[in-house]
Amino acid sequence: MFTDQRLKSVTIPFKLVNNLIIIKVKINNIPLNLILDTGIKQTLLLNLKDKNTDKYQNLKKTRFVGTGNEKKSIQAVKTINNSIKLSDLIISKNANLYYITNENFNFSETLGIPVYGFIGGDLLNNFIVKIDYSRNKIKFYSQADFNYKKIRHYHKIPIKLSDDKPFVQTKIKFGKKSEEIPVKLLIDTGNSDALWLFENGNLKLPKKIKYIKDYFGLGFNGEIQGKRIKLYDLKLSKKIKFRDIYTALPDSIYFIDLIRKNKFDGIIGSEILNRFKLILDYKNKAIYLKKNWWKYHNEFLFNDSGMNLVYAGKIPVKVKKTITQFDENANFNNKNTVVASTEIIYEYKFVDRIIINYIRPDSPAYKAGFMVGDVLLSINGNSVYNYKLNELEKKFFYKTGKILKFVIIRKGIELELKLENKKQL
Image 1: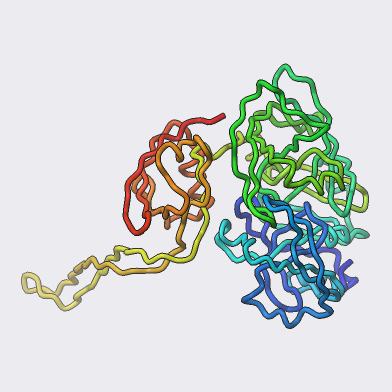
Image 2 (image 1 turned 30 degrees about the horizontal axis):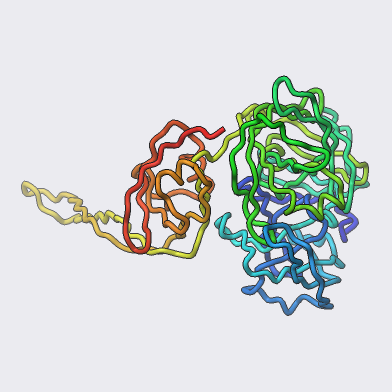
């Protein structure tokens, strides 16, 4: 509920970076960038060392069991009675928040903008939430004032809520001749991938299916790795289905506690969700989907190169600059003439340093001789600093059959390497 009862809705813009929804929020009047994450219950904060944390009151130590390659709990602090504002409008005066003190978990390295945590389901269930991926806007509606007649052209899909997280019952097929398998999947706006499936007692990978070993990013307890396959079919309803989805199969041990608690088979992430206008209606246990036709039929892409990039501090780069000067008093053939002269100078500026933080075994990047820690300077003559990280990956790493020429720095030495981006699946 909005604290101002006259309000029916609040609309705010968001940035979509690596398929993640990043919104500006004020918590106790402190501005923060947070990721909208339907895959968690609590609103979590992290990396607040450069923010004023004195405004968080009633602190109590607690612990989380996180995902990742180290099976240990994470230290956190619970704080109560916090105010949350969107567009300077208060939507909660007594929110419970959790502050993760693990400084090694840093989303900003992969996104390129400061991110301080996640808005979870315990806040979303007080509203009906419309996410418009095509316009980069999100709208929070008061439940009593939402007009269902306006969404009659949407596809309604029932959900089940568990621990303030939305799950759908749907079907998948591993191959064209395979049988349909019923699965329970988490709707997770905080997962940038298309689809994750967990190999467990209910879901077994066919013996003959092709897969590669892959890296799926960081959990709260470290790296998450597993297998990557191309799934033949995912069917959300009679009119909503997808083919040839690059699908992650992370090792279930990273998620064993979540799987046992919620008894589910995988995750639908934002690479699928951003093909729709999405409405979350937790009160009536439903989601509503309307196809973004300009994106719905796009093929699913995959980083075949096998290298994963992150931002890591700053680096000085020499930049060419052209200076033009005009002389309005120049005399040419006894006439006053404006003469322009140009001069090329070079100056240094600090830019985001882009490094390789993971290389997939037996991938094109691995075979070309790249190493973790290599600093990227250019690809095919294009400076990497002219692109944002996600733009750089889409422009070069998702296109197979091409030769990519890199200039890198390794231990202070500039090197040139070639990579043939071959299809892996």
